[in-house]
Image (cartoon, rainbow, N blue to C red; front, side, top):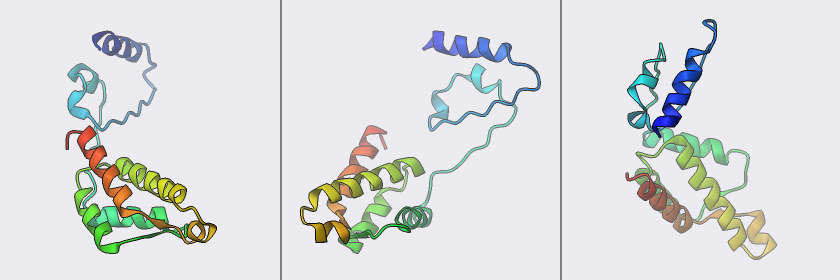
Length: 133
């Protein structure tokens, strides 16, 4: 890892003064301090709260014909998803949609697809576990 950091630091040294570098991470605490010092401005974005997660889900589902198979369970999953990034929430929901579609065997079920909350719940739990949340 040190070699990677040193290489990045050296590349920064060769950039023209007029360069603008934009970087993003979900793991700021894992970055080397020497690398962070190379940036003049650091803008932090907080993880979404329950209300923002609901808005994200509405945006994801706005163009589709998808509904949750159990709204009450979906609301519990939204509460459980607090602490995940926007990306993680979007990834788990889209994966749940895809798996729900594959599970729907009849064409009528596919056309009015319901998102399996049990699939989504499992994906959110796995994501939180993999991120040690």
